[in-house]
Length: 171
Ligand SMILES: [Zn+2]
Image (tube, rainbow, N blue to C red; front, side, top):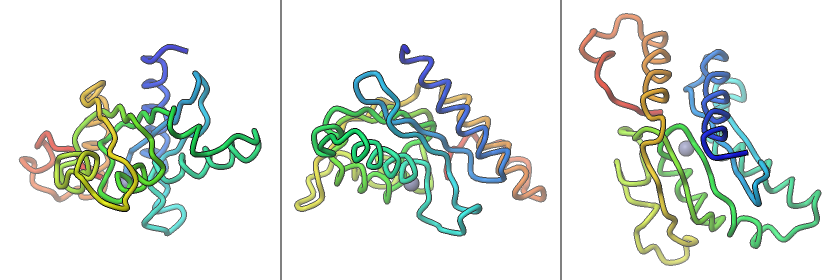
């Protein structure tokens, strides 16, 4: 499957999250042209604030490695993460620890972004916190922003229009 199809899949995951009343973020982990993990934000469903799409996908990818009897370290070193929204600080740190080299994301995460928006967890020199990773930002970002806008409109119907309309993207 080519890359644009993958991004369509991340958007589908995000849409499902949105339909479930979750912050609409979806992601895929691709190794050797195979999807080894995918996730959508499940914070409300699980009542666990750490169940971001990336964490769900990482857990699936770890399971995949166990089942395939492959070394996690080797697989993750050659895995690309596709995600609709810039990973937050927590997820960026987790991606460093797993040594995932490349993240392709849609829109910025202005509230919690760990790849430049709030902190630079992705590229900073951090001793004992895995390896820095590369980011490619902006692909299909309008779609990701649109879903977030729909979500925050539902969440807070009384929000002043200027705030809802603001082209921001956060999770
Ligand atoms: Zn996160």
